[in-house]
Every structure is written in C-alpha cells, then in structure tokens.
Image 1 (tube, rainbow, N blue to C red):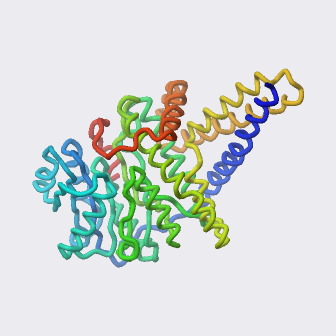
Image 2: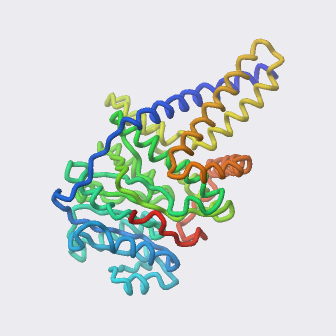
Image 3: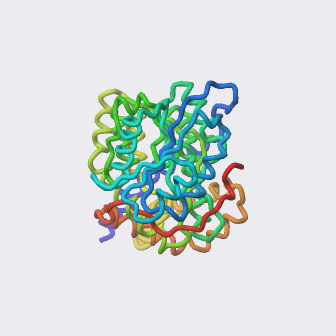
Amino acid sequence: MNFVIGVFLLLVLFPLTLLVLYQWFLAVSSFFYRPSIVFSGARQAQFLILIPAHNEEVGIASTLESLRVLNYASERYRVLVIADRCTDGTAALARSLNAQCFERFEGQPGKGAALAWGIQEARNAQISFDAVVIVDADTLVDRNLLSAFNVEYQAGRQVQQGYNYISNPWTSPFTRIMAVTGVLRNGRYYAGKMAIGLQGMLTGTGMCLGAGILERHGWTAFSVGEDWEFSVELLLGDEKIYFNPLAKTFAKESQNFKQASHQRLRWASGRYAVMGSKVWALIRQGIRTSSFSLIDSAVTLVAPNYSSQASLALLCFIGSWVNAGDPFWAFSFYWAATLFVAIASYFVMGIFSTEAPGKALVGLVLVPVFLPWRLTIELLGMLGYGRRNWGRRSRAASSSQHVNR
C-alpha cells in the first residue's frame, strides 16, 4: 500500500511542482513588464462594441452607462446589444439608453452563436468597423478601454484580451478571494507571459478582434467554453493573442457559493470539453512548428486553477504523512509541505498585489470551505456536468466603484 500511495504522490507532485515553479517564474517576470503607454495622439480605429445579452435587464444599464463616457471620440465607436431570446425588457432598455439593439429569437442557442449572428447582422446592416470589442452585459469598463485597445491595434495586434477584473472585490469573503485570483491571473500570470514573449488566452469579456481576424476566421466557437475554444482555433490558425493590461473591464462577481456554483461549473465543464478535443492539436502543432508558445498555451489550457493546486498539494501532504513511517518515502512529506507553502506564498503575493491588501486578507477566513468547493466544481466539470446553455444567474448588486477611475 505504501508503494501505491508513494507512486501516486510522485505522479501528482512532480507536474504540480513544475507548474508552481513556472507560475512563480512568470510572476517575477511580470514585475519587469512595461505595457505600451496610452496616448491621445494615435489614429483612432473605428470600434464596434458587441454586448451579447440574455435576460440582462437588471444590469445592462450600468454597462451601457460606462460605455457612454469612454475617453474616446464618440463618432469612432458604436454600441450594439445582441438581445438573444430575451423574455424580459433587455432590448427595450438598451434602446431607451440610445444603444442599437438586434433581437434574436431563432437558431442555435448560446453566447457563441449569438456573437456569430450579431457579427453577421452588423455586416448585413453595413456597419463599418476596424475591430470588434466584446463586453458582457454585466460588465463595467474603464474609460480608457478603447484607447488602450487602439494603441495595440495600431501596432498590429489583431487579437487582444484585456485585464478582466471584478467590480465588487470587497463585497464578501468570496469576492475577496476572487479579487486575489483575478490579480494573480491578470497581473502576474498573463502579464508575465507578455514579458517573456508568450501569448494570452481569451477570457470571454473585454476581448478585441480586428476585422481581418473575423474575415479570415469568422466566429467559430459555439460550445459553453466559447472563449477557450476560439482561443485555440486562433492559435492553431497561426494568430497571436496579446494580453493588454491597460484595457480594463470589471465584471460583477457572485457574492457566495450558491450564486457562483452554476456559472463556475459551466466554465469548468467548457474548459474540460475544449481540453479534451483541442489540447493535443496544440501540442502536435507546437512540436511540428517548433513553437514553444503553442505548447505553453496547451499548458495554460490543462493547468488546474490556483485553488485546485492548493487542494492537490494539501491532499499530497496528507498522503505523504500516511507514508511518513516508511523511510523510502519520507522525502515526499517534505516535498508536499514545501509545495503547499509555495502555493500559499503565491496567494499571499496576490493579496499584496491588490489595491487593498488589508481587505483582501479577510477573504482567508473562507479558504477552508472555498478549497473543497472549488475542487468539487472542477471534478464535476471534468465529468461533463454543466454543459448547458448560457443565461443570466444571480450575481452581486450593481457596483461602479472601479469604473472610469
């Protein structure tokens, strides 16, 4: 039995250690990353801002208001709401706030299908644009969103993912944990990738796609993990995904486990579906073309999230303690303990990378419950639960504390 436990521990500890070391390397690299400076003298591209919405009457007004006051020439961008199978007042509210709105009642359900339909309808309506920016209907945007996208668009970056944070980081212990992981994901992981010349991945909102990209590829992702799916399709099509930390969006985060469970399960299930069908294609093409960047993107796709890493390290620590009586496997106890400390230290770095470390620290009280909850979500997602259509779920109340700052 000790041998079986020991081998299992090695199979988990070795790749997990490599992943944690890599994350620390990216975190250190992120401190040396200097993004392009947004300046007002650049030629302004024509942007079409698409907002896919399914029964978002409650929150879409805040989103539209944040888009109304962008630090960008009003004649150089247009807002289009795609009201997909809405049974509430989303479309009427959008129009009352001077946004153009296309309503969709037929065809394949889902956010990806709504986006593909909306892009085609915009072309049919002869709406001209240099690039499309996709913003969720529960998301607030920074005033410099388009200015930041414009600088990199003019530099030739046709696919961009902005810094996707949350608008209510200090509402509850749950949102405080999500604030920390958001900073780690954006400010340390993806910024670190940019610092060493690697690529980002699309994350569903705050995305900018050049018209040329849409001409060559269209929108081809229709699964519940449409952002992961489209990312892989672009990468396999030899396109580059640039993480733009100055293009900031702020999504309304769920305040507790009950509100978050359905959405997290859908996201996890979508990622595992894409992983199962696409990860080997990334690896094969990366090997064939000697592209480390593609292999790195495959690692990003398969890597467990931070909380799952902590849970796995903790389980390894417990398992190694069971094996501690066997001198041959005693090293695994110290290995697992060191790994758990490294992951915990990484999270602490995230706490002190937020704008209010003292407030972020309060979220630690929820960690003993958060870890098993998140691991359960991942396991259920791996089994295929949650692969259903998109829709609005209960989230936090509207917050504008981060917008236009």
